Each structure stands twice: as C-alpha cells, then as structure tokens.
Image (cartoon, rainbow, N blue to C red; front, side, top):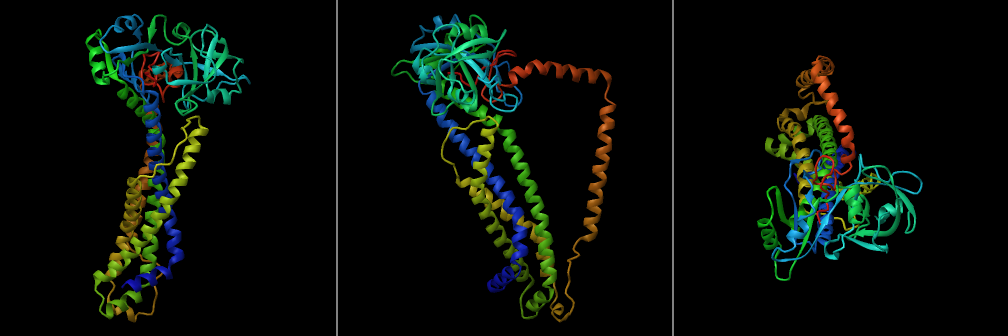
Length: 480
C-alpha cells in the first residue's frame, strides 16, 4: 500500500501541489501571527523589565473604568502633596511623581510627527530627577532644566530632523508652545516606547501643559536595601487615603506590556481571519481535487478491491495521501511563517508601531499549531472522497468509462449554495431598511456619541501605551 500511495502522489503531484498552495498560505499566516506575537511579547517583556528595574512600587488612583480599544484602565490624577507625606513610609528610599499625557511634536518641516489615530501615541511628560525611576536615558545633550526646554526621543528626532539646539513646536493643553530641544533620549534599548513620540518637560511645565497644576498621574518609589517590592507596596497601601492603591513595579511592567499586546490584538485577529479564510478555501480545493482523482481512479480502486484490498485499506490509502500533502504543505507554511512575521513587523514599523530590535521567537507551540491545523484541514476535506473510494466495488475494474467528476453531493451543494445566496441577499436588503427605521431619538443619540468622540480623539492617541487617567488626562503606559 505504501508503494501505491507513493505512485498516486507522484502521478497527481501537479494537481496536489496547486491544491496545497491554499494550505501553505493559511498556515504561513497563522505561523507568522504566532511568531510575531511571541516576538513582541518577549521583546517588550524584556524592555519593560529593564526600564522598571529600579521601580519597587507605584502609587496611583484606582481605575474608574476600563477604556475601550486597548486603552487600558482609566484613572484620576493623584495629588502632588502625597509625595512628601509618603516619603516617610518605612522602606522608601526615594520617590518622584510621574506625568504623562497627550503632547504632539511638530517636526522641522512643519508636519506633526507620528500618526496617533492609527499608530503609536504622542506623549508628553516630566523628566525624572531620580535616575533609578527614570525609564529614559540621555543619548545627546542634557535634561530639561527650565521652561521652554524639552528632551525628545531619538525616533522623533530622526523622523522630525531635529537635533540638540533646534527649536520646535509642541501641541498640548492651551496654545502651541515654542520650545528648544536640549536633549535626545532613548527608552531602554529602544529609541522610543513602542514607536511613540515623547516630549519631556520640567515637572512644573509638564503639570501645566499635560496634567494639571499640583497633580501627577502616579508616584513611583525606590525601596531601601533589603525591602522587597511586595513589602514596600503593603507599607504604602496602609498610608494611602481611600481611592488610591499601591502596586509593585513588576505588576506595573506587566500591565504596560499587556496594554501593548491588547492594542495589537486587532491586528492579530485580522491576520487570523485571513488565515482561516485561506484554509477554508483550501479545504474546498482539496475536497474537489480528491473527488476528481478518486473518480479518475475508479478502475484502479476496483482492481485493488478485486485483488483483495479491503474497503478500509482503500480509504486509508486516500487519507494517507491527504496526510502527506497536509504535512508537506504545513511544513512549507511554517517556514514561510518566519518571513511573514518579518514582513508584519516591518508593516507595523511603517504604521508607526515601532518594535525594538530583537531575535525572532519561533516557539514549539507555533510548530504544533501549524502542523495540526494544516494537516487537520487537509484530512477532513479529503474524508468524504476517501469514503467514496472505499465504496468502489471490484466490478468497477472491468468498466471502460473513466469519470471526470465525482458527482458527490451535487444536490446538497446546490441547495446549500442557494440557501446561502438567499440569506446574503436578504441581509443585504434588510440592513439598510433597519437602519432607516431607527427612531429619531436613537439617531440623535448616535450623533451625540460621535460628537463626544471627536474631542476624545485627543486621547485616542494614547491607546497603545496609555493605560490610565481621567477623560482628559489618561494614565500612561509608563507608570514609572
């Protein structure tokens, strides 16, 4: 039987190879999505673990609600007077308030940097004086020391053609501000946090332009030697008023990474949908191909039955051909998945969602999922033709005619296709009628929601790296 299966595969290699292309496409998209997700998770996990290395605890307001579209928990601001009172808590070595919110930087050519509506956010904040709590490090120039001075991330400096000593315009609360770039900063091993545009002011200026006077988004703490993050967070929690919470630096880092992964979830979902569509098309192609080949090999299968092959053996021979095709197509799809992941990473970079440089993560899970999905779809699609091949009677070996079509399930396919077509036509004409029949009050409510979202576009820019804050000042992804 092995020899017969091999001869059957070689005899129909062109038809089977063309059929396998859909499986290769589907598996490559699935593998590419999994590789990209694992790579992003590991890259940002290491990145945030590095920048939060000196942060033992973070004090912030409790979440008022969870934002939509991956914006994370939305939190009110924290009163700056807490910095002095919490400094005396047991285990605190140093502390500093953190500010982050929407700020748009204008490049030298007059164009606003980034594309916050569809890409990474445009952020502004304060420069931390405590080195252990500062996720940024200077790569050129010096930190902002006076009003009108700013430090910007290296990616924005490169994209906006800005250098130390240049003047630029920033958009934040109030009228546009003319500032002088005095420093260029990096974020861990990356040029910026997830491709975001970052403008850093002195703390008083950041409070006035980004948050509110006398307010912080959060307060970060350094622990004394011998004090764990959990212990310091507990000590701080006992001293906090109602409505505030203390979390460890490790938890803050995990939340930041999760915010990025959730924000990219729509992209991963879109890719998986395309992959499943390709596999569905491939299943139909495989079903059709095996149906035709089984019909063309009616005499051959009848001869096998005549010389003693059982129905199970004939059925198994066809299914084993499907397994071989599925395994080979899946293997090729997995190999192409690495290239797909690289292309998707480049696409995210073009959209402004920069991913720090790092190695590709090709996990065992990706191999298992790719092989199971590709092979499983192929075998399931070939099951019906295989059953038909097993039902061929030995007398078929004496027939002269060669079938050119299986004819299997033709009536069922006609009725199923007609039903789907009718449902699609009904949905096409029903949808506009239902929308037209909406009550006037409901339409007014929808318009109002849209109007409310327009000023909210300001904060939509923070959707990737911005997990908190109130409606007009959201907590950033960088709790520090």
